[in-house]
Length: 397
Ligand SMILES: *Cc1c(COP(=O)(O)O)cnc(C)c1O
Image (cartoon, rainbow, N blue to C red; front, side, top):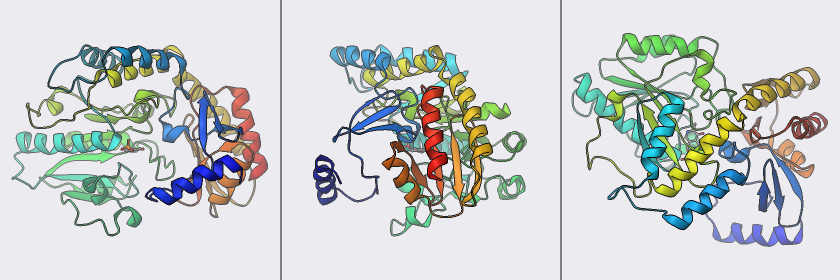
């Protein structure tokens, strides 16, 4: 290992909690789709910080707003008002068509907030007896790492030794509409799921599934809550992944690319009837809705639309999927799937050594679920840059 890198790696390994197992690359600079390590090596980023830097690393337009706002005011807390928050609400509702916004910071906080809103909505609107509200979720889900959220994970590793767990969740198989119908009781207030399971391995449900889910939710007066923290904001070639099926969710959670990677900003979006359950004092966050985060998020959204990143994701997504499917023919491939620049290459064997080999050749990918390589470069990537990644993947696999 190179000299400078090994110093930082050892320091990190000695002093930090080891809840991650990162590839051994120590980044100190990044621009667009490219990152540079402390030893001067250059890599093409095909993970995009789990889709938080859809707008590209250190996007210059967002950087400008970030600097300008940081010199004015960064944090007021919600004890006082600030000018950026209402403008953020305005931009986000105009872009998405939702009627109400709750600003938070991390993705997990947005999910937690949506769970609280759904439960309260259920008590107020469905006469569910106190403390009996149920939320249905899916196997293989990923919604974050808080104690409540891991309570309804099906991943043993996320839960082992972290109990006791929060009750009130029912886990059903993803993509199984009959299982959903069977799980519904008079106490069900919501169905929470990802329109495409990202951490689960870029798992795309069969055509029509989300639409059927929407219908069953409507028939049973159940909130449809979609976690678009990874799939939203252009990643799958649409603003939201649910647009591929034209569904009409009640609640959507976003985060990650909402700030283009500058600052943790997340939000819950809903129709009026859901988020209006919160009254002053019932929920909050010191940093949620802060002017720096809001200014950055407004610009991050503007970049998505003005720079046509969603269109680029759709176009180059089709391109990479076609090339990989037609040219990647080896017996270690189980399936290649994707939507927009959100691609999963499922291997019949463990993927880690292939990610290491790709890194050696200047392409950064990270395995998920042992045997799946996720390819999700920043949406500003050009066809020429993407060809570098594709050619390298073809050669390595
Ligand atoms: C990343 C992610 C989260 C959690 O976001 P954090 O900011 O890490 O708390 C939740 N849901 C999905 C689908 C995610 O990809």
